[in-house]
Amino acid sequence: MGFQEARRERGAYQVQVKARTQIGPHVVRVTAQGESLGELPQRGFDHWFRLFLPADGEDAALEHVPDRFTTGPYLKFVASGAAKRLTVRNYTIRHHRPADGEIDIDFAVHSGGVASQWAQNARSGDRFALLDQGCGFDLPDDAGSLLLAGDETAQSAILGILRDLPAEAGGLAVIEVPSQEDAQSEVTASDVELRHVFRKAGEAPGAAALEQVRAWQFDRPAATSAYLAGERNLVAQARRHLADAGVPKPNITFMSYWHSP
Ligand SMILES: Cc1cc2nc3c(=O)[nH]c(=O)nc-3n(C[C@H](O)[C@H](O)[C@H](O)COP(=O)(O)OP(=O)(O)OC[C@H]3O[C@@H](n4cnc5c(N)ncnc54)[C@H](O)[C@@H]3O)c2cc1C
Image (tube, rainbow, N blue to C red; front, top):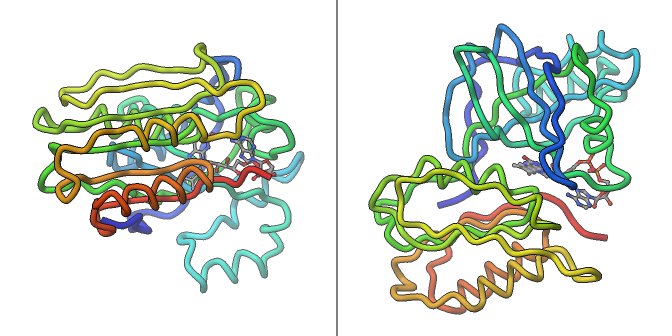
């Protein structure tokens, strides 16, 4: 498996904020609404997208969001000047309601981030745009021994995967969050255990999740598949541990979402 750059089936989705909800002390949910969202394919799992946020008074720049994030369209986007007026970040769909033309996006709140700040201040009617990037997770043929691990930024991805796993899937899903109130549950048909761990004061982000990954007892390392997402060190060290423990590298899907300074 590998973290794939997914296909585009339609260009940018122009949307607006319907609601902002504080889900936990460190998580803000923005509900986006737009007629075009009725056409967004419901891919499930860790379906993610590029998010284009205009600076104050720069809504007109949204018309220049590229159809694809490949070199040619991206260079055109930069040349239009819109790249200077829009912030581009990556986020995951937490819930998708095609019939209502709505998605929920859960933002991990932290200091100094443009997207994090935007989410905290989002008001009904604020405009933004999305570009569909598809899924990173590929359901393995043998899903009986899965290890999913990440931090709060990967909570939507891991819960989405859990929600969509078949009954024969088994294993462990570990999500590290800053506090107990940030933890969310999910219904799953699978036998995968969902385990939240909580960051202690002063502890590096990802350390608690990494501890769980290292403690996991493999029955069948060669038949295990893993999905790792979140802070860079967590992802890198968990991947190294799993590879050393005998999990074949092609079975490890990983993506560094952000880097702790
Ligand atoms: C495929 C994919 C899907 C993602 N899905 C989600 C999602 O659903 N929800 C979500 O919250 N994030 C998600 N992320 C992570 C998110 O894109 C990054 O955290 C992003 O940097 C946040 O942008 P920002 O503008 O708030 O901060 P930036 O302007 O990018 O960064 C500002 C500073 O904050 C630091 N920083 C960034 N993120 C965090 C954080 N979470 N905690 C502490 N410090 C941080 C940076 O290192 C930098 O020093 C995803 C990333 C990828 C690649």
